[in-house]
Length: 207
Image (tube, rainbow, N blue to C red):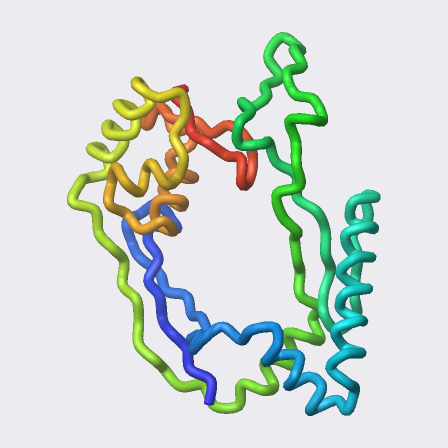
């Protein structure tokens, strides 16, 4: 039986109210060897043949994504590459047309994946009886919003940039709530904070 957890997330509309979303409860991670044994058992294809096919697919995916393609595999999903700045490099800007970034400063930081609709539908069909398995409430901060903004500005007065993890440590918020709050504060005149960079390379600086 599939179990789900109700999780509280904060302030999506900027009015202080909380909302809920739901996720499937994970019992444990299924390791590759066990998963492949199950595939072989239910498909009639040998485990060795499945391993060989996966290795071939993995190699071809890397090759095609590196060549600038996104790759769609029917029944599974669409794959693409993500670029970011290397950890030891500074973020680039567009100021005065100055180019600070070159290819050696960038690296592939991840692979994006969008599930095929049939995979989603098939998974849904197999979740016959959903059963509630508890809920997760927000970790509250002992600081008000104004105090949290002041903490962030003070941090940035001594540091060039602030990341989500820094804001979590400063405020005591959960990472999800801290991320959402920083997105809302980004560019607000009263916050004095703006973002720089995108996705995994996003940081926050003084306006």
